Image (cartoon, rainbow, N blue to C red; front, side, top):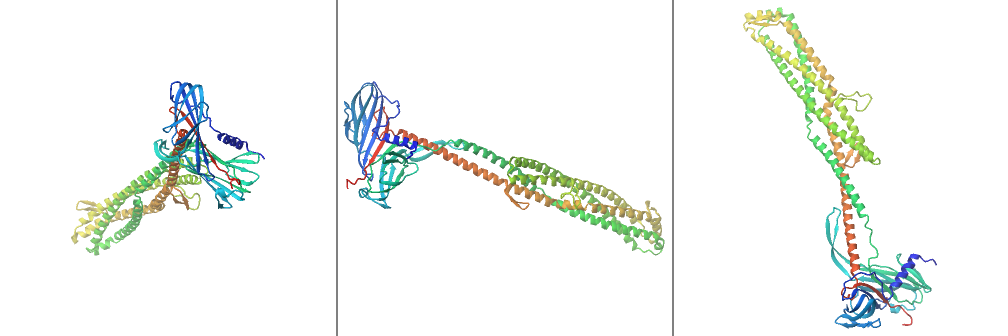
Amino acid sequence: MHINAKRVRLAAIVATLTAVSLVAGTVQGASPASGIKQIEDTETVYVLMDAAGSVKSTVVVDWLHVQGSGSASLVDPAPEVDKVESLTDSFEPTLSDGSVTADITVDGTGDFFYQAETDAELPLDIDVVYTLDGARMPADQLAGKSGRLRIDISIHNKLERTETITFEDADGVERSSEVTYTVPILCLPQFVVDGRQMLNVVVPDEAQIMVTGSKRTYVVPILPSPDATATIEMDAEDIELEPTVIVALPMLPASPDFSTVDELQTLRGGLGQLGRLSEGHLQVVEGLVAGMGSYDLSGTSAAVEGLTELQSALDQMASGTADLATLSEAQLAYLDGVIAGIDTSQFDSLAELQAAIGQMAQAASQLETGTESLVTLLGGQIALVEQLQASNTALAQKAVQMSEANPGDGDLQGLAAGLQGQDALIAILLDGGDPDGPGPASAMPGLRETRDQLAGIGSGLAALEDGLSELETRSAALSAVPQAFEQLKTALVVLRDGGIVQGQQLPGLSTTTSGLKSMADGLAQASSGMSESATTLDMLGSLPAMMGDLRSALEALAQGGTLQGQRLPGITTTVEALGEMVGGLGTGVDEMRKGEALVDAMKAAAANYTTFLGLPEGAVGHVSFLFKLDGVSKEIQ
């Protein structure tokens, strides 16, 4: 049979540990007497137990290794010791007041052995359970039986400690925590079975095996903290069991690897920087959304409605002025006939004409003022869109950089493309163009072109106002026509041919007719010009909706939402995810560093557990335990 070399070495070590003593490294201790430099006290505690784990007797074999020269009196604590027996010639220890005392003389080195029987409390409780074919059975009833045998050795460690440990958390802050643990004691139960009677043996994977002839020794290492169980199962025939030996050593055989803590801390720092970067992006986008929310674009719709009403008023004014011109022509043609038959009611029409001209002049002034305000509004809106264009361009560049850095992230690719598309739309909004590319739909004018056109309309309205004011001034002269019927004919002649009335030069009706025709033509041209700007005005009316769409897109980018039919996570999702990862890694680092501090404390506790009965003053100590459980023999039955 091939036997694993590692298992053979471990089994050999375990067998060696069952010897009388353990050789440990030398540590300098205090000198208890002149000439004595060092005392090394090695205790091997032998515990004899019945097959169920009840203690029958405890014997401590004490090896005192002394270095120095001269004579000294040793005092070795021995609580609850009933009997002391020397194991070294010329060494005569005595028991007095709970201590073992002896006079020694050394020249260089000296080794002194004695054994002491004690009732001192052991650090471990052992309980053994035997099960045959699934039924629990006392050990004294197993001998000679056959079946599937299971042996469970349960060990309880009573050396519980509570202390406060300190460690540095993930943020570099020193923290403390109260922990409770048991002093690590490695226990090595050794199951010895006869391969001729015990078949199909099942032991834990960590068990080691040593073969001597037909005998197999299975060593199952366990570390009770505070409890642990070693188990072996086998098909047994005509059961007899060798005594079971359990070697117990104060030590922590292995500990977790904490070398990755620094790497996790570095990863946590990198994720934290990414989180702060995402938070910055979120602040920028939320700032844009908040800024857009403060823009009042309701005036654009009102301006469009005002311009529409203005166009309608101009149409009505042009039609009315043309009617007046026609009326003037008729009056001029029939003026002679009218002079003979005119009555005073005709003067009412002239008064209405004067009032209409005044209203037209006032309307033209208001239209000019409204047009100038609209030009100013468009200028402010153009500046606002230019700021938005600059911000969107910066965001688009950043998104492109992030998408190039993360070519596999579809969300970043889509974000970069969307911001670049918005950049193109903003440019068309400012300077005009064709949003859907070449096709049947014509290109739309930009805000700048609309502003320039409105400025031209304002100039035309100023000229119209001047003309109407002059006409109103001239028509006011009609009020000076003598009310007397006798002067009516002269006035009508002056009205037809022109002349001086009450010291004022009054133009003739022919001049008025010509002016009315010119005004009608100008109003018609103004109305036609506004009709040609209908597309620009429509776009101005849709500006609030366009800004709303842009704001919705930015809100989806910040908080997540549906964009162009796709559900997209927002920057907040990235911030929250990175925050959770940083928090989780921080908790993990804290727990690992706390665990490392706990392991160090357990190692220190094991290293400081150096004696069972006590040490001479200034001595260094080592302790080990060897528990021997009775076997099962047919002869006893």
